[in-house]
Figure 1 (cartoon, rainbow, N blue to C red):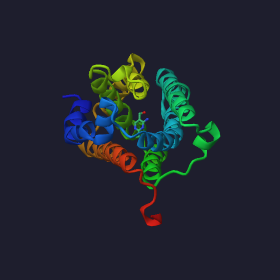
Figure 2: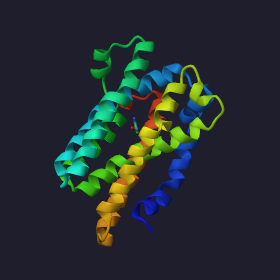
Figure 3: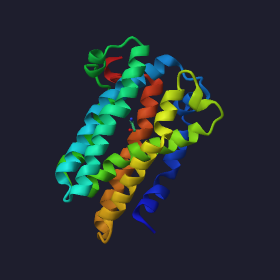
Length: 224
Ligand SMILES: Cc1ncc(CO)c(N)n1
């Protein structure tokens, strides 16, 4: 069994909860409160600023030009394709790009992105990829699932979001990253694989919490 298959099986109970989450369901059937989506977009933008840096660190840690080139592509695609979706939504909400970039991160945004950056900066390339993969992989799955709902990808408001993550380009980048993790983990001893699995599980858990945070528009509970 490929290592990615082992990871996939491990996190299915959480992915099922992601798909059933009212935020995700609400994008799929168009009923999601726009204020919740507005909050999500801002926090996700901040998240992606840090997330992009993981691809840059990946370029530094990679040992061959092909992998370096792919990380450069992922960095470009995040900053200039994925985040332009956020900038377009921000326009609809009358939020300026500056406001978006300088918004205050919520506790969960900071915890999730900084956990990934910590792993990325202090551990090996396989660990870095394990940290960033649940983000790409779970969004690729959610995008694909939601795009199967009749009319969802054409929805006047949430359609652009669904189309972006269901798009072949995003699906292929996720697939490349999955294959990279399989290559990087090949022949590793079980104690290292177990550690990598833990990292993957942790960021998978953070993905679920991010949906929940967005649905509840939670910032810092201590301030409320
Ligand atoms: C929180 C989160 N996870 C995954 C993605 C997909 O890149 C995203 N934009 N945001």
